[in-house]
Image (cartoon, rainbow, N blue to C red; front, side, top):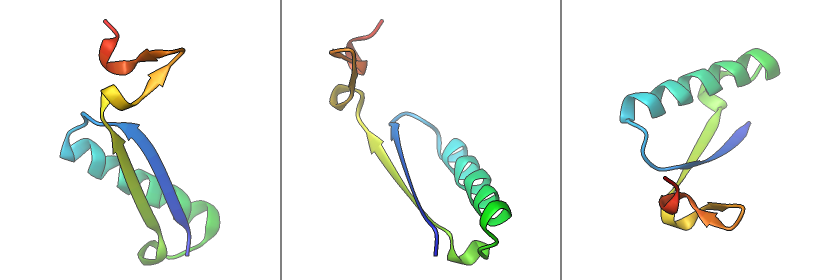
Amino acid sequence: MPIVNIDLIAGRSQDQLKGLIEDVTSAVVKNTGAPAEHVHIILNEMQPNRYSVGGVLKSDEK
């Protein structure tokens, strides 16, 4: 049972998230041989004010 964790900054549409899940599932099935119904995907969405790069919060970027 493959488990995939994806961390991303919140703000994508439901359609974008569905497409991501479909594409990742297909890639896991193709490369592991696991059936799609056994592929688990966990999306962790972070608010921009809870993620930083180089000491700058994403919410503070211009």
